[in-house]
Length: 131
Image 1 (cartoon, rainbow, N blue to C red):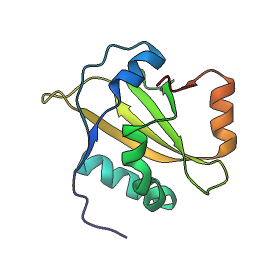
Image 2: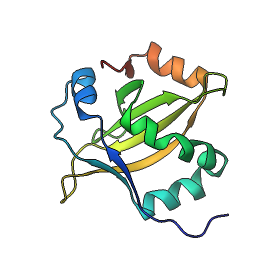
Image 3: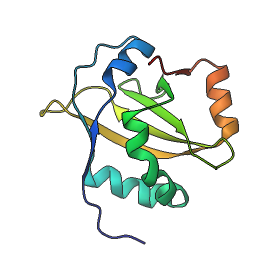
Image 4: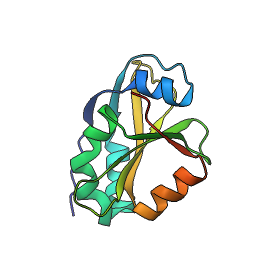
């Protein structure tokens, strides 16, 4: 198990795509994975950690699906299918409000199954990204 959880700057959040898709008015900013969130995923989602960490940057920069987190109104969800993994996807939860630097904090990331992805789509909780 990894014990070092460095913060990671993932790149510029795809705010234009997010705004078009879910009707927000986010301002440009970087997406950051804090040490705390990094540790949270390793501890709470260890089976998803390595696979999802490989794709987190792609999800943040070029999401395929976007939605509002139903139980966490201040967050939004970005999703993208994981290549070669049977339709499963990486879900990245991001804090809606920018921090004091004007950047957005990744709260969590984990794998969702192809079935879970289709359920979220069917309920209208996530929408295809409007690019």
